[in-house]
Length: 394
Image 1 (cartoon, one colour):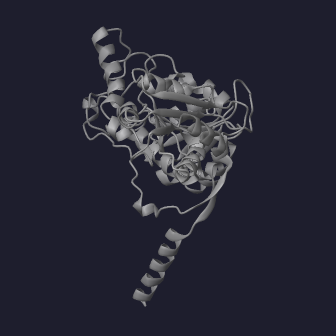
Image 2 (cartoon, rainbow, N blue to C red):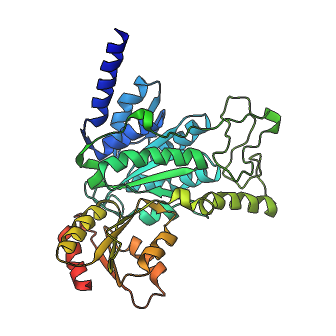
Image 3 (cartoon, rainbow, N blue to C red):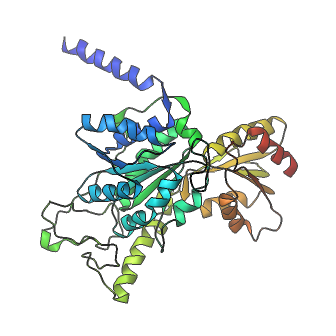
């Protein structure tokens, strides 16, 4: 009898693993967050990210988590930071105008080395702009929106399934490196639906926060540690530590000593520069013998893949380079792939935010042509638009 029951359970599990479900991008993000162990969401509704909040408002209470709708985006990100300091895996979701309001507190999360995840479903701007139209106008803001030299980890999916996967990765990286991680996506991806086969939860790699094992009197909230993850105490666990947005020492207390400030700033920087291989993900598509490269992210990468396939069918040697990690920008990987191409085409839904990064890396390459393909009118760039640029560069 027990063997029959085990067989049935196995069959159900295998069927569940192989079954595809129709998911919206925002749904995939909410499900990815739940799979990663999120237990706090603080947010304020804003198109086109609202579905994330709606789903988590229903699901978190069922799982013992907390959902709170705050009075605005500033309060939202502050509630997320507080929840994380109390031990929660915490997140919020917003769009361009709300993301702008969150920037100061995002900087606070980074200097206080407090894990959290911010999802920005981009829409047309500036200001209120085009609430229901796609954009990629927040790419530079996601890196430079906070003042000062703050580190940035920013991920960018281009499929619904990848939205699920990179949400989990965002939580893992935030816990591992004790920082705020941003997940960017376009309105189109947030609202489009695709058939997705979700992985068996038991196969997922989830990073949980390490707790300190030293006595409270030995604990340093900002101890130097070249290896991650780093132990992190939470409020109410008997460990005394201070949290501030001021420059601080290893115990968290404000300092003006240049040596202590330099140590703190170096620690924030080392999280990024010492872990580039762990942080950077980039896809190379049909680049093996390419003479022309298309560099694109998000929804534009989908059009670019179609354009590459169309061009290949006509005998044009072209490929796609797609960053899944926007920040830190994949300098070395881009240089390596683009050094042998004759032209680089950069399609994006802004006025050149990725183009400037590629220009920076190819500035000394005199035999290379750099071609922008840009739209800021609320419409997406089509495969035909990119194919036209490929043919002109060929």
